[in-house]
Image (cartoon, rainbow, N blue to C red; front, side, top):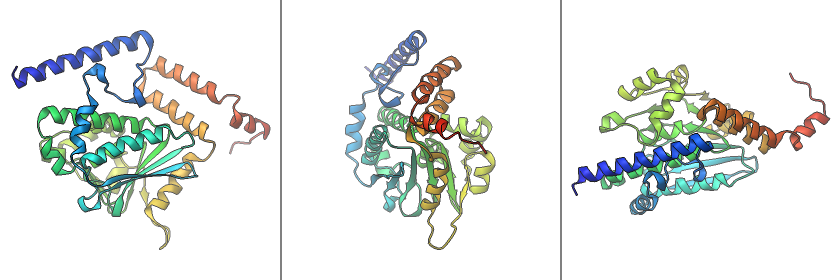
Length: 314
């Protein structure tokens, strides 16, 4: 069988599988997949195949610290290559997301890069080794799954952009609820210069963040987004300024996100869940989800405590 025919058959199987999932969704509500991922075996995705490929390209790490405050710190750590993702870093990112999915005390997450820069995308050694369309598609599906699960975490997430966020690094910023930039930092979707389009879900998420016209400008023009332009189009939610010689960008980002994570974890996580359902689901499904989530907090400890102290809203 020719390669083109193989790809055609895979495409047909993918569409049939996803069509069946869609019919199930229509009949029974949204399909349930592990950890909120997009692709499963029903869509022809064989995760073990791409995991084996990625394992062959080591280097760097994804570090995770879960703090008592309920705010976790995730560090993209490969400074020798501007924090570019190696194969094993992609696998570690999946592992870290799985850990955060199990962290019931969590309320917030800050994603940042080591050594003063965010992330320059994929490591070219790994990219060259999987440059055929078949492996590229598998890597695309793997990373779309991981970053979709990251976005769907019941945590309020922030990407702290220091230095540069390029290519896949720019896509990673869109998998967070908010983006903060530091003075002099840049976000750039450089995919066009590589003869590509985003493949980690960055284009779809970017349209939802900045609108289709601004997304076209950023993708087709590969425009560098500085702090001013980022805030103007809604890609950046603010610019971090250091308040003293002792302060750090990460420390200021923690203060910023703390304004949204103050309060009991079940309530903060419930807020994220209802916003997520409103963003992703049809109205009727979103309303049902909101009803179900409401039922988990109504009459709960935080609700009863608030009623007992007769709060006055300012």
